[in-house]
Length: 142
Image 1 (cartoon, rainbow, N blue to C red):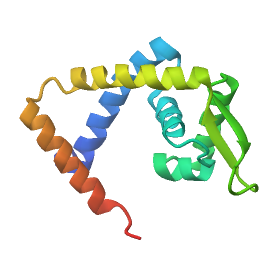
Image 2: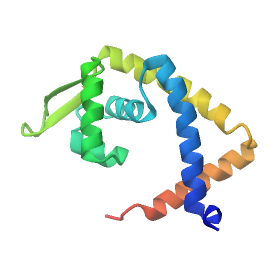
Image 3: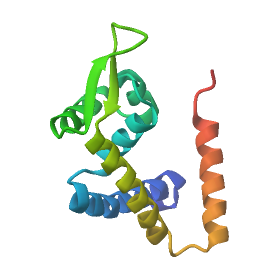
Image 4: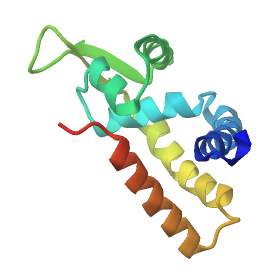
């Protein structure tokens, strides 16, 4: 049966977790998980290029472009010539973007604790380790 496949279970868990997280994040900041993920990534990597954000966040370029436009229109990020490669654009969070990234990280950690409350600490640690191992095994090697 289709529901026995690991991929189906991962998709279901992801969709349900994202739905709940999006409700919380939209309520607080009128942003979804994707927007906050991109914002936090830019905060963590000042001067990151859109191409690198696309790779790191695993977002298709058109979707990333819309997300960046939204964040920029809200005054949460800025674009400027890249300090090393002037042909590229560097991205940075603004003070308002930095504040939202910081605040949403705290709320995100609390939300994650709530969302996995059905699991014991040992089960959470095992799940985290197994998912990390699975992701690492699927990433391309250089």
